[in-house]
Image 1 (cartoon, rainbow, N blue to C red):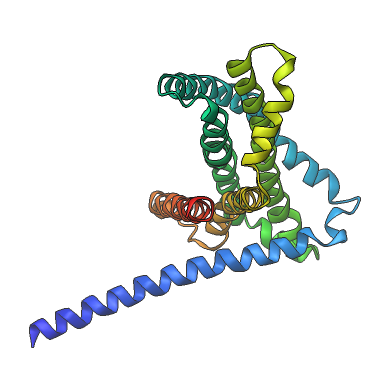
Image 2 (cartoon, one colour):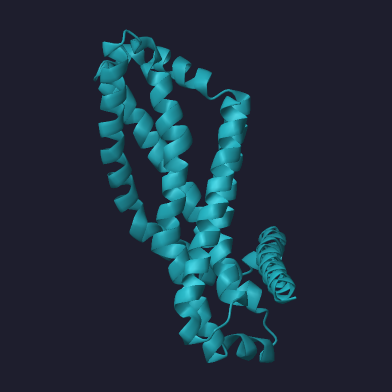
Length: 267
């Protein structure tokens, strides 16, 4: 009988863990739906709320923009050179541009931008939200007749989303420029051929997958830390465990999105 009790206890523990896991992800999805509705509402950009939103967007994007572009350019030069030399040595130089665009622009830059924004911005914003919960700021806003989601959560979520899109767009343009310079040099005569090759890679299907992947990366980076700060316990003694769970959720979501995009592009 003892082994039956142990089995039932194990199954009960697994059921509770699965229930908490489903509840956490449901909260993230629900928060994402609420944030998207608020983001589409014109009242979210009223004269009173606009300065708060602009401040958060600037603070999330400006400090990391130059650093990320510089690091991605440095990494891009190394990767582009490796790809070009390898392709030329194997007699496949005509595929060098396509390989660079697919590996660097389509796959690495969106993932790197999402991780960069998460580590430098979103996780820090989650810590701020947790401190605001401890200080009772949510209750103060509610007493003043203000919606905490409008004033505290929405600006931070939109700031994270905007930061990811900005880093991806600018880094992709810089990488495409560096690829052209590495392959063709300063000659302007290959621009048409280069644009044709890049356009062949960015077919409508690939472009749509790239746009959706970037969008869901941005949503994940913005929402998972905020959901953790809104719903997880505020006990300082559980902070290490909470941060570890946050990182696990974040990396699992990013990995799942990346795998789905790879299947869409190459399956």
